[in-house]
Amino acid sequence: MFNFYYGALFVIVNFALFLLCYRFFGRTGLYAWIGVATVLANIQVTKTIEMLGIVMTLGNTMYGTIYLTSDLLNEKYGEKAAKKAVWFGFFTLIMTTIIMQMVLVFEPTADDFAQKPLEKLFGLMPRLALGSLLAYFISQFLDVRIYTMLKKAFPKYNQLWIRNNGSTIISQFVDSLVFCTVAFAFFHPWHVWWQILISTYLIKFVISLASTPVLYVARTFKVDQND
Image (cartoon, rainbow, N blue to C red; front, side, top):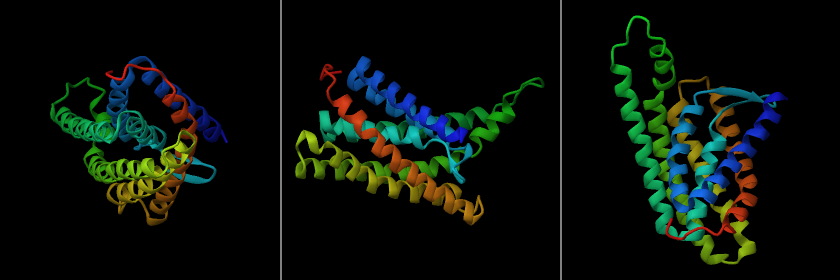
């Protein structure tokens, strides 16, 4: 049960840091969060854990905050700002992949200790990045589009939870399916792949529900609209 309780704490810390980032740095902080979260989520996903008897990868919480960020940008600054954030995250992931693959090519010294761990961590990154890029590109623009449609259909403040969860539930299923297929198909046994797919989506679904109060809180922050 340690992973379950520690995971709950992990979610709270992620959301708290997200709110602090927006409170202190405004819209600029949201774009910065997108960039950092995109990189960290793709590093964390290399770690597999077991929670409540289900095999899952890390990174789902951090990745869920990306949807939270784009929804907040769409809510307060409009669809154009949300799409800009999607492109920013897309570029960040490509940039990180290219740079880290070049880093691995450098010949290490005889007493270097970092090369092998870096190879293990970032050696999978091209495949993970391809899966993540495809999933990110498809699901994020889908999320922005659905959120915009729901914003028109359910414009009231107390209907924010419909906009947030309605867009995220659909887009994150597409994201999970695309990413798990590209990143883990034929890499893990199929029963493990299936567990990762289901657990990844369920965790993202729970994170989406948990992020709704965070979105309500963030929406009330008085920050400079030009930040």
